[in-house]
Length: 331
Image 1 (spheres, rainbow, N blue to C red):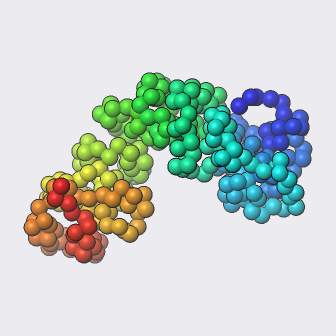
Image 2 (image 1 turned 60 degrees about the vertical axis):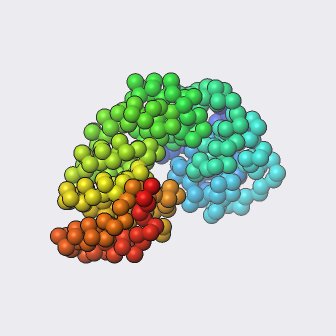
Image 3 (image 1 turned 180 degrees about the vertical axis):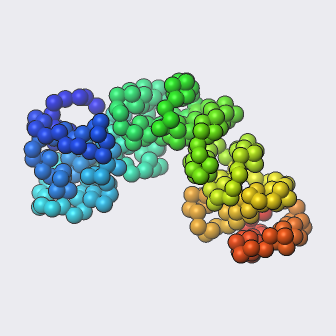
């Protein structure tokens, strides 16, 4: 975390080169040797790691086309000699030290369960203090985003005060990660109100994917109400989002009766409850259509098909009929 005049990669030599990165406001600051290895995709693991802590592994020169998650180069343009001291830290080595663990979390492509569980073993208030400090000291979007992911997956309600501050000083570039943090830290109605207000500013074409990204963690029937009042055209993401928000059969009937786009969204919502449908993210929630009168399903869906028999509807109806037991739940 300390800002020094030493090379960001090796942390030993003085800075000789300032190399532009994807972010013009955050260039790489390197010694001559590390600069040469950077441009030749030949960084040692610890050098890659140190740069990833500052710049995130999503920068072009650091990303997974060139390096594994342990910092080993895939396609170096020069030979690399890696000694024990040149290896990147492992989770086992850093998990007991909060600052080192937070560094490690930034270098991961995704914030996965092993890191989340390690962070949960630390004091929430100390973690929050460090997360806030890192958030404000960096201008790097990916690092800021990772800090908000930690709020979402580790800190939850203990960070509610800070999340409210972030909404008061809202940065539109951070809508997605602020939304994730909001879902875990604020009461549902309060959080959704903030997000719905910002989604009003999103264009019609981008809205469905923005809505899914912002709202999927809430899993709230209020989201279904919002979809019903907001969607103006069909998009796959409406059904993805609806399926994980505890949809009822009564609502599916209502949407079918309203016609397009809600009728198509209803069919997609039901189809998304089938394992192997193609959406691994949705599948992990094992979505169901709740409170179903099983005797109604087939006649009502077939009746809709008679009115709207296009190939897409035919395919979805067939999938739903073949998987009724998996999709519909009386509870």
